[in-house]
Image 1 (cartoon, helix red, strand yellow):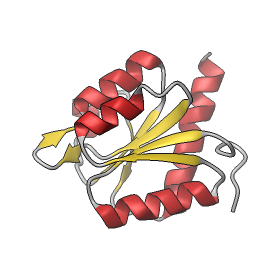
Image 2 (cartoon, rainbow, N blue to C red):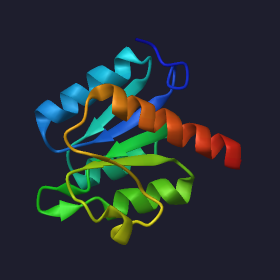
Image 3 (cartoon, rainbow, N blue to C red):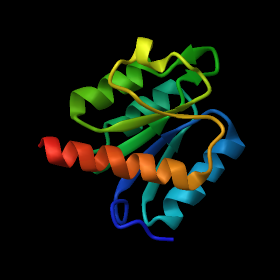
Length: 124
């Protein structure tokens, strides 16, 4: 099911759980997006610098670390992102964060990404 807001957009998925990452990829690709995926911070930082990146879905906890450096780079570049995390206190860590709690159906994440893209477009 194509989502016009995501059609042709490049979305970064940062998730260290392979099955969750696969589910996110399938949902986003079904919505018409191109997906870049990373499971670790160094690779995610590299992909977060991609010139065609439109938005991201980021898990907060990645193995032994967290995604703060990735989110900082995304924010510096003006790339909207959504946290997809089971961690409840995201607003204490990242006050402007849009969070979708785990677990969630793929359409909720597609809608959340479409929402942050629309918010950024209105603000620009």
